[in-house]
Image 1 (cartoon, helix red, strand yellow):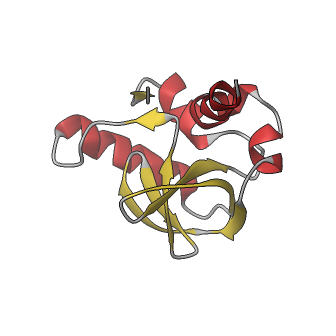
Image 2 (image 1 turned 45 degrees about the vertical axis):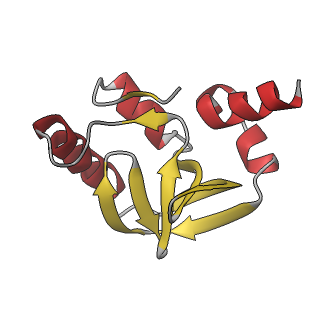
Image 3 (image 1 turned 135 degrees about the horizontal axis):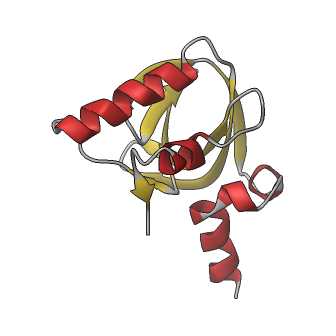
Length: 118
């Protein structure tokens, strides 16, 4: 049961209110210092892989479009990221929200640029 709860927080954070932040192992706040691709950004120098997001690879046209849109969304914004303690390669897994509280990954999914990571 705990595993299902963990998966819900990682895969569907936009539906869980403040639960991802309450269960986070680490919180970071700051500007996006680099956009690696549509589902990985760096915030205050910390690489963050969105746990709920699956975008095309950056060497594809769809991947380039997703990365460009992510760049548009975060430029000039202060992001708040809840990191769940897991990692993938050199990236911390978590979620980031814009100043208005909207979930970045959910926005990319809603706009049809990426899918949900399963």
